[in-house]
Amino acid sequence: MSDAQPRPHARTQAVWAGEGGVFMGRATQVPVVHSVSFGYDDLDEWRAAALGEIPGHIYGRNTNPTVAVFEEKVRVLENAEAATSFSTGMAAISDTLFTLLEPGQRVVSVVDTYGGTNRMFSEFLPRVGVKVKLCPTADQAAIESAIDEGLRVLYLESPTNPTCKVLDLARLAARARAKGAIVVVDNTFATPINQHPLELGAHLVIHSATKFLGGHADALGGVVAGEKGLVESIFRRREITGATLHPEAAYLLLRGMKTLALRVERQNANALTIARWLKGRPEVEAVFYPGLEDHPGHDVARRQMPGGFGGVLSFQPRGGFESVRKLLPRLRWAHRAANLGAVETVVAPPAVGSHVELTAAERAALGIPEALVRYSCGIEDANDLIADLEQALAGIG
Ligand SMILES: *Cc1c(COP(=O)(O)O)cnc(C)c1O
Image (cartoon, rainbow, N blue to C red):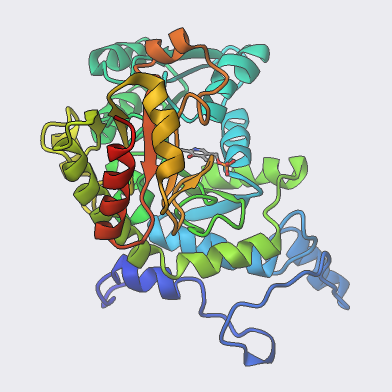
């Protein structure tokens, strides 16, 4: 593109990207195409579509017109060469790791990746002979020396769940690239509004679309975007193993994504306001949020998250788990549930939510206090959320 217009802002892309097709009956909104199969009268055309020589859908496990629009919207927002989708975020992560890694090869990651991802590293990958090295998340030197020992895949997540640690993605990606590794980043917490892992050196970016991308906690989905050849090889596996995104879910995710920028901008602002407020409360022992100036990853986050620091924070009320037990039921404007990134505020203590399967000692080893609350800000008014937290904290004393 020689005399191309400047790249549109993500606010515009979130609304328009992928939606340029002429749909049935000239519908302005993307139709939900439930059809499992796509018919051809001309056998040469059918064969050419099946071989990918001309555009065209064949069978719903492989591709679908509604799902394709969702993939295109994510591709544009992540500024990627290609994108492919999955029934869930975990399907995206699993198919990606099993496509990239062969027995005897090595993957380097950190100890506090998403719980399901951690199970891939601790259980499923070792079972097929993949060597897994998990480093302490806050110890950059340890991650760097693990990279220097050689690897096929570097798998990162930033900010992390639930203590919002920040990894220097550009620095670690460059180090891994020098070793010939493929760099994969789970961008679920940050969203493409706040952070662009591909621009920081990742080959592939993954999302649980269930969270911020969809934003309404009513559809599961996953997506991988990045270098064309890699995305294609992951798609080749998914179209056979079958973790296909349903067209109905794709529609809900697409509709959610139109407001992605609006929502995330509000969630960023709410999280920063609330983190600062919590920090000043006598009932609160610690607050974890990369937007706070005294957060150990704040400077890196300021560089690599130009859009904002994200909608998720966590905090530790004084008084141990008993305080959390009293605090959470008092909150009026929050779902107590195992989810995040929705328009409603969602709270969960890792001890009963994301990290329930671990013992207290294992959680402590990961630096997760028993009395931690993960607070995923919704799009409500910050003053209402603060008033709600204030009355709830007053009741735990
Ligand atoms: C939820 C989540 C996943 C898994 O996504 P599902 O859609 O629930 O399978 C992966 N990574 C992160 C960071 C998540 O928050």
